[in-house]
Image (cartoon, rainbow, N blue to C red; front, top):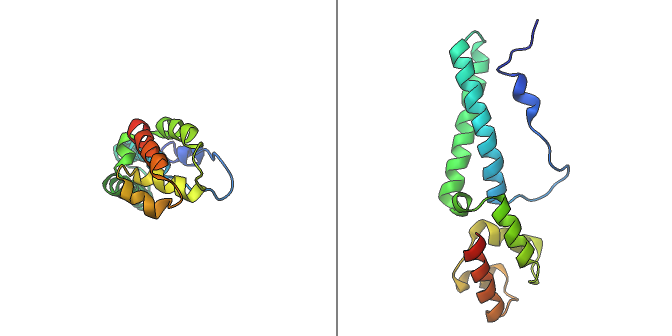
Length: 143
């Protein structure tokens, strides 16, 4: 029996890196958004042909609901996901490398994109006022 074309793309997701690496909200939003487009097209194709079993429809609808919920949550809680893309984050990272920041601090800065100096006291308390001002300018420029 020939494979179902609606579900043939299931294994098409590409693994970019093996291992545990924290992802920024921008990266998660980008990945889930790409998957959401794929799920929407598979769902539309399935509904058009609707010859599959009930569980396939339920699975697709559950995946679509999950993808929508994740992207909506990230857009509400991390507005930077709507403004910045991975290229903008990469540009920011290239310039932010001059600061004495750990990876957890950088991840928080990317996710929150704070533009008020008071937030930096909690995120990276070792920065001086000049560094904070420069970092805020970079956030406004890139994120």
